[in-house]
Image (cartoon, rainbow, N blue to C red; front, side):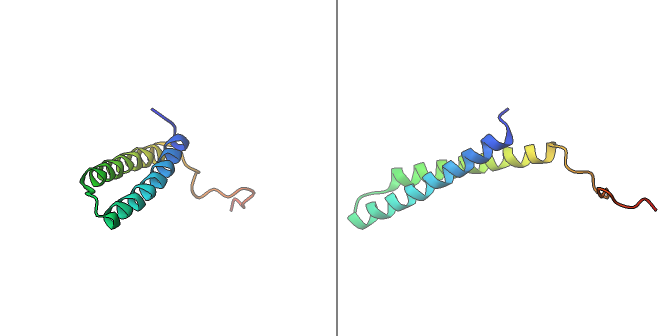
Length: 77
């Protein structure tokens, strides 16, 4: 399973691609060209981002976090 940093990078890369795809769809619509296949691709890209976000969230829950209630150099009353 890939690490969380790889997944975060992949999510960011895919979001940039989604933005480009949306701009391309707008250009096609302005030119009067059919956008059905481009919209299908966009929906697949969004589904892939959702899957990556789920993987990221699962890895986030699985990694050990800081111990709560402990302060470095704190008083022990």
